[in-house]
Image 1: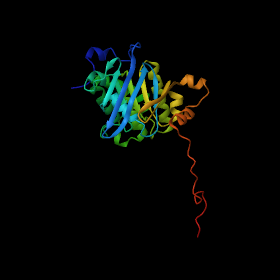
Image 2: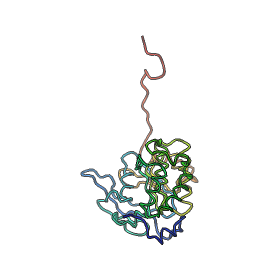
Image 3: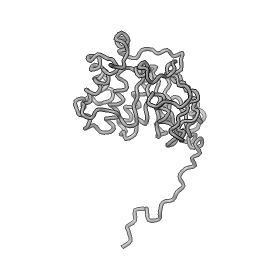
Image 4: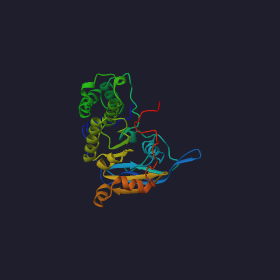
Length: 278
């Protein structure tokens, strides 16, 4: 059994269909997630309009990945309500999985498959006919600059190639919602530029992208709206155009909001390139 749409629906979605922009893509109301005595997310409220490229930032352990886990259904909230595309999220309902693409920090791929085979398999799991999945796979391999590696075993892919292939797998069924958890980790500059171009283009077509990243410079260049989470709560949110018009850098805002005063530790005297004493 696959998790894709009906045959009529998939045939009508060869490209990106125009989404209903009147509803929020993501709405989170008072979400809480506890792991035993640890509260990872603590009363999170979040609303993201359709077509938004949203950057969710925060220090390590702030609750970013836990939030993405709840939004994608891999984690169940302890309390609160989550709505996606105007419907209350039910992680067991294939309707939601069929409309989202997810790229985790570590790409979940079959290392003994070839790049093209992995894409075709992913497409068929979402209900595409084999021929349509193969057609889309070729297009996506070209889009992420992997066409020359289509017949290479994934076991032989670099980390950046794996990341790009994982993104292609997340796109093959034309999702309306995309979640990317640290997509630039371990990715070279050329691959990162490809990923940035693809994600920006998706939002221009009406898809909604939620991105988590530690790289503030990437978020500042890419996202249209930014939120900062700290200790499991959304503590700051702003439109990037407004932030730029105010003349304030995202780095300065981030450091102020999370209370980071910079690293003032001094190097040990013996660090500095000198020769060791005889």
